[in-house]
Amino acid sequence: MEKARKILLEKFPLNDVSAELGYKSVSHFIAAFKKYGTTPKQYIMA
Image (cartoon, rainbow, N blue to C red):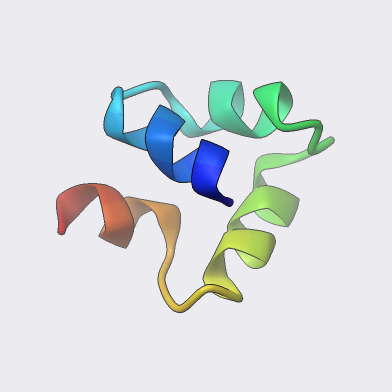
């Protein structure tokens, strides 16, 4: 998820980030990211 956090802070769209990391859907990426305590959107806005 460290790579995901880095990419998210560079303001890439979620679908691009999830595809870059090998997730077949954005919803699977969001579910995996939430296991670390927050959603991708909340992380970007923090």
